[in-house]
Image 1: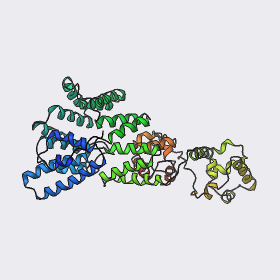
Image 2: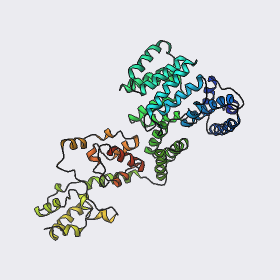
Image 3: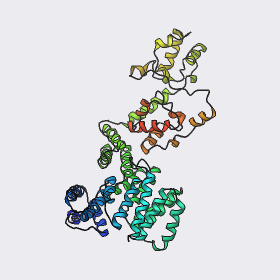
Image 4: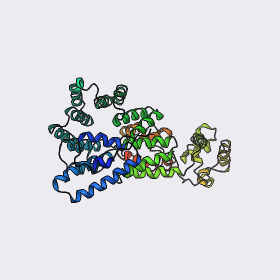
Length: 458
């Protein structure tokens, strides 16, 4: 039997006051699906029209309704604007929630504000909520969450220790406990706490997201997708859910679902340039055919191109000429013409025939890449006279760049493990990787600049 839809209009428009118990009802209604979300948008339009003509006392009540409504619609900045103009413990508590959302670490932070400022405002709001009568245990647990985000783990743990005896059946307590464990580098303990939170409250979106994220990190894609998809049912749906789920969908060639995730991000925050670029990348993938056999062939072809010239027996003359021209691999020979080889000092027809025989044996030919439209340029060779500091920078693992999930997976596919290996790649080479679009390229370039590095050819 289909569950009847909750009447959101009766909840928000027909009633003058809005109380704490109605929040869960509102959330349940939005979780019922698309038609309810559309109804909510129409309701916010109605409330904003009423706001324009309402008297001052009524305006505060309408601001409260609008603030909480926009929060659950994922329009957090708009929610903050309204909640700042409302009054009472409920308004203060949800203002704290909104500021905490905006204070999350990038790339999910508010691009227009400083994360530190949002977290500080969250603490102030939760303090006001508690002082004006909101449930002390709930406000204290949220403050523990803010302290954790501020890296004050000792203070967060102190609050949890104080609340432990009275919070044995509180899902939020176990969520915050899991957050502390994760911050301390103990994902196993964190996962147990998150699982307990979900056991007590199956709709706890925060715990569901962290379980999805931990599985994502471990490469358990299907489990991660399952948790992320559950998060979609319980608003507000965080940016992290949509970004990470979209990337996993792309990895499993579900580009239609990935595109919808990114479109949803863009609708919620049209100023999010990152979401806009992800939409373009995913939409482009919808029109591309992908054959795993083609990728396997491409990988085998790439390995052949990277075979060093020194693997073959060459005459001294040929070997010296190639060395002077900085030609080190078979791939380098595909990016040069026969005329350019013959123009090299002491490189004659005999040497040319010797090289052509080697290329033919590997099903390659001189100038092949040029014929396929690739720009003529040799692979960058690291300078030999590097300072110890410069060499240390190039030896750093690519993980030091703290790349997004999508860019990090592309680095793994390309077998790029160090910054030195990364800067040997051109932008075009990176863009040839599956799921690596302009968004990821921009991100890589920005992170390299922080190390005073750039891609070859930039």
